[in-house]
Structures are given as structure tokens and as C-alpha cells.
Length: 258
Length: 258
Image (cartoon, rainbow over all chains, first blue to last red):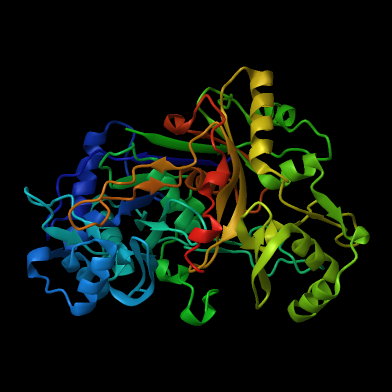
């Protein structure tokens, strides 16, 4: 019998530039309660926001000069032109500007709402002052965090960086992998078709995305629990850092919608 | 601390038309080992194929007469024209016919590869003879299975019917909800934006899809374990059957790609 388990750690302190996130995770493990220790083969899933903050991927609205295009889009969508400018800066391409959302392809290649730009929880009093962007290179962030966790605890875990993305044809958002290290992002069983040419079963499982979705369910509603420890996926955890979440991206020339 | 747990039950026998799936699940609970009993608030996730078979949503290839269009598509894709005909029969619309896959909108409104048509594991010797289609009305199937599980065990669980779908911009497949009863498919926190107009956090969590993805991870690689019991999502389980997975479907006029 296989058994998947995902446990959210208690609140981390407010994260600031330069914070040692691995050390904060280790400290949170100790305060969350008995029974959670890092072990080889676990996956440590981290909501990207804390990582972005520790790396300084934040933008002060006061520093942003909106372009004419940002002003134009902001007027249509009823948003702050400076926030729209940050979204444009994070985007390689606006896939769709419709209703109240910009669907963007980020510089990393992720297709998501508002290029993954979030309002900071750390906003000062009296209104929003800073936005949080996606990490520059989430796979590199995952590798660095993994190495540091190994340094501090001696364990070989995988690290998964997550964000909540919408879907083309379905309502709501699911967490997906935007970075990972030490795990197989895709479990490949392709080629197993039969005489009809149809699949025998799902043949290319997006393990990292499914793990991200599972991790998000372990968080209590409306709580701030950015770190989730997953047991039961040891078969996907690898000694090497592996290809990262970039392997999940469909190349532009394979995009089903062009 | 919240804690998500997903455990796969052992193999079910080969399912045939008219089988009492709930009774087979209860029997599988008993043989899977100690510690798994149904309890109020659990989610019982079922890979759709066993449900389809119990309901007779299977097609014998020998009975299929391919249309000219099916022959044409099959020639391009190198597939059996009768299998393509089954896919066409299941589709309200072919969203895209490209490379080696048909992206279809099914009569239910699901957008997925090959209209969810699968090769049956129960194919006779000497080649594929039957295909398995999606259940006619997966939400109704979930309600029926839920009621029967309640009848047999006295417990109030939710039932989730799953299938593996590809994604527009990402490689690989993730399991999603195609039917559910007794749970909130979408956890709605919308409207929580701030002065910038950007989201404070993911505000419309696709709980049922995330639970489907988590359930699939609890299955051992390449095993036949259609039923997974999920603990830790009691907050999303409801006494009433609720809106079902149809609530997850983006209406045609809201499709981001039209």
C-alpha cells in the first residue's frame, strides 16, 4: 500500500531580503510539533512568495513609472497602472488581455494570470506599497534551498517551489510547480499505446504539479503556511537535482493554441 | 496543523457491467489492511474507468462503423478509424486536431485528449476489442456511489470521480475531477483584491481538482489501484451532494481562447 502524506509547518516569520529560508524552515519544523523531522526522500514544498521575498523579488510601487500601455490596460481593468507595469515587466508576452485579468507568458515561460505578480502580505500600513514577483530562476532557487537544507540537516530531500495558476478551460486555481530540485518533474510512460493508437492510461504524469496541488490542500484555509512536507513520493526523489520545473513547460512551437 | 493523507486501496477485481462498485470498495477496504475504514468526512476518489465499466460505458470496436471523417482523421494520426469514431461520438466539438492527438470538448463540456476515451484493460486476448468512455453523467454517478456507500457503511463520505487530463501550456497530465458529490468543488475567496487590483492570494481554489491530483500520487507506479481514500479535507465535505464537478467547467462564452 502506498500512502501520500502532506503536513504544513507552522507560520514562518515575515520574510525579508537575505533571510536564511532553510534555517527558518528547520526552526519551524521544531516548533510545529513532534513527528515532523526532515528525512531522506521527502519533498519540501514552498509557496514561492517567501522565497521571492528572501531573494528580493519585490517591487515598491513608489519606484514604478507606468508606461502609456500600462496606463491604458489599467484603465480598462480598473487597476493601479503601476501594478500593471510590474506585470508587463515580468512578461515576455501578453497572451490575452480580457475581462479583469492579463494572461501572460513570463520571461521564464510560465503562462499565468498577471505574470504571477502578487500583492505582498508585508505591505505597509495605509495601503499596498510592494508587490511580490516570481523568483528570477525558481529552479536555481530550489537547488540552492535544497543544498542549504542538506547542509543544515544532513538529509537528502527534494525542494518544490509552487504558485497557484488558473487553467484554460476550468474554473479556479490549482498550485503547480514553478521550480524544483531533486525530484522527477514528469514520470514518463509514453509510448505505451496499443493497436487503436489510444493511450493505455495516463502516460506522462506531471508529478511535480500534482505534488504542488497536494501540498496546497495541506494548508488550513486562509492560513499562512508556506511550507509543506510531503511523504510517500520517495520514488520520485533523486540524488541529482535533475531537470527542474522548466521541463514542464510546453515549448512555444508545441503550444496547442497557436 | 493540518494534515492531508491519501491511501490507495488494493486491487479491485475486473469490473463488469452491473457490478456493485460500492460493495467492492467496502470489500477492498477490508483486505487492504488494518487502519483503513471509511469515516465521516473522508473523500473516496475513484478513477473513472471502473465506474464506466460498471455502468456499461464501454464500446466494442467490432460494433463501430467509422464515418468518412473518422477515416480521414485516423489516416493522418495513424490510428484505428473505429477508435477515432468513438472519440467523435463522445465529442461535442473537436477543439484541435493536431499531431497525434484530438483535443475534444466532450458532451459534458470537458476539454481533454481523445474525449477521455481509453483502451480497456479488459480487452480480450489477441488485441484490443473494447474502449472505455467517460461516464454519461459523472456527477450523477458520484451521487449514486455516495448514497450506496452510505447505505453499506453508515458513513457520510464525499465521492470524487477522476481522470487524467493534459494541460494547455504544460507537459504531462494531472488527474482532475470529472464528477463529485458531497464536497465543495471550488473554495471561493474571490473579491479579496486590494488597491492595486491584484489578488491577495489564490482566491478560487479548485479543491476537487487538487484532491484528484493528490489521490493519483497515492497510487503506486503502474499499479491498478482505482480507489484512494483521502483524509484531512473534512472542511470541504458537505452533507448535501452539492453542485458537482460541472461547477469546475468554464462556460463556452468565458473560454479564454475564443
